Image (cartoon, rainbow, N blue to C red):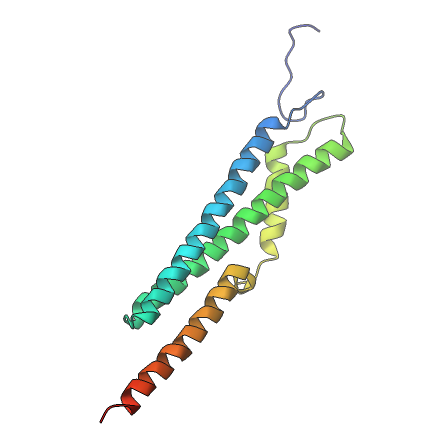
Length: 152
């Protein structure tokens, strides 16, 4: 019937994903901000080690890297859940359009349930950070040892 509206959940008809895809693009851009934050935290931590600043500051940078890696993982899972929900609806073309919010939440929860506390340690930037930190500590220790050895 003309002028008749249907509810957004479980309705029949056409659905446009352009708004959702635009929001996904924004989220992906935010992922690059997280990556930049990890680069900055890494740089600061390495500078702290190089200038022999107290260990608690280095620990704070390590915690910041862990938090950023976890944020990155969670945001990646959310983006995957949204993309999966969109693809599901596009491919299945159900007669009734499912509740997209609920579908995304289910897919996101399924991804999050696969997490373990050490997953973030596989983050490439986190791994690189830990390797650089370890190497720089070795170099600094060797330099201090040479300075002490060269004293009269």
